[in-house]
Length: 316
Ligand SMILES: [Fe+2]
Image (cartoon, rainbow, N blue to C red; front, top):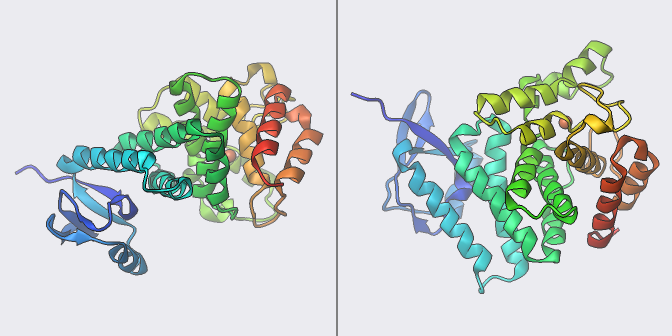
């Protein structure tokens, strides 16, 4: 008999207060046990109970995955177009939705099993950004500024799409690509030990190990059958600097791709404006001043546009 396959889903992606169209399972050791039959309603308090017990994912049968993805898409479309929700409520829903997929992908490196979901999540954020000039500010106001890879990935993705849009990328495919590259740019850190990533006072060989993470990010993309060279180069070059002082290759500006130049700027900005273990968080204004003082590291035309975008949108 062929073995049934199960795929993980994040609980927040379920529509609360409704029964799901498919049974939900929990993982216990190597076994999957029925958690909810499809007739039972799943509520927000169920999520809290599961989370309190340390459970992050529920599972569905692989055969139900397409249905699940299209249900979510339907749900999000309703949110975006809902007249009943005000703009702020819609923003919260959209941010939560992008977090659902971002969290799964960034913490597991598994893009294969959630390709459609992650695509829809980025496209939804992109459509929302294009809807109104306030959307960008609203989304950013929701983001936390603590040090964590998930919030950082989401923000870099949002900043990258907003900057690309400002730079005149009119094609939605390009905006999606830069959004995806932004979300997963640091995914290669999964291949580096947590101890090393959080270590203070690194010796040269340790720093060298950490600076390999863009190369690991590329490996993970290839392992997940993502072979789009624009996405790969963007991810690979997010720490390259125009003056050649960046890593892993020390490329000069003329050898850095457009996506790489964008990601370098937005990655640095989000890093500077976050609470990090060993450095002080800067506010928007100080972070922009800091980057302008070091303008030799960046593509200057892109940096200027990013400064304008941020000055317009953020309360300094
Ligand atoms: Fe990085």
